[in-house]
Image (cartoon, rainbow, N blue to C red):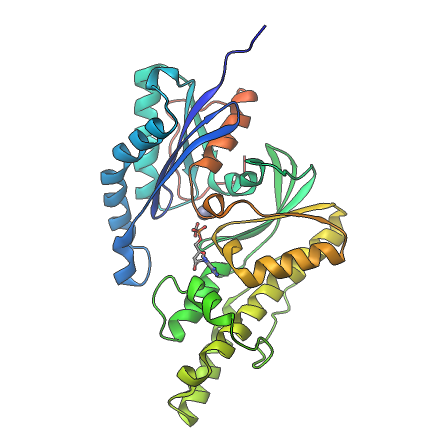
Length: 338
Ligand code: KG4
Ligand code: ZN
């Protein structure tokens, strides 16, 4: 007897990416991402402009995702949306659209936690980690170490007390006069620099939590002092400065991950989120896994930055668990883990 396929449309709109994805029986058929260019000129995401851009993007993005998956609306078995956390106006666009569609098609609605989805991006394609695994989720908005026991059972065992890892990259880049988002540029310049040329402090935070605000201040004072002595300091030493900053951010992240591995004794470790695109982090992560004899996993880049495929895969597991949301469910800027 053949089982009826489970086809889900997922929508992500928590920040500055409008994304829609179709997944069938846990396999991603499409993942369309409309990136909002409007924020570049402001040096960061402007919430009100993000909401307006989502309003413009949502219908064409969903349409493109259905077409790319060769899927008719009538084939859908559920509609999923990112419920939290994120910018409330941005989240409301995706949630209202998902609710209206679920209502009109008379199919279940699934509410997904964005951070849980980042972790489960690791389940999208082979090779997949085995449970339990640890995931270091690093993006512009979040820095967490998550212990994942099963697709829907996970626990945050460490997180940032202030800035996220991506913010540490972006704010450092801003101090160097680089445009937003500066993370990829620091990565680029770091490639030809000496990571040990300048020493930035490693914060002493107990347990598995992170802090990046001290690093930002240390970089600010360092640059003020150096440019006071030599106004051309940044320009002359850009590669070494970037490599040294990146080196410190990476060591802060991986030292905590290593500590978490010791405490949990897991064998599989993953990274996720936009900062996992960082080449220094990727290579140090793989090296650390090898030296500790662990299996390491990094999702394909399109599943690392904000995307609806990770919402779809999470929704698929929720569908299997019959974890549906009422039409009265709503987006929230902050949310506890379910
Ligand atoms: O996951 P993401 O796309 O959006 C959020 O949910 O925040 O992450 C964006 C963050 C930005 O801070 C950006 O600078 C950083 O990821 N990022 C990088 C790199 N690519 C993206 N940071 C360092 N190196 C990179 N190659
Ligand atoms: Zn994210």
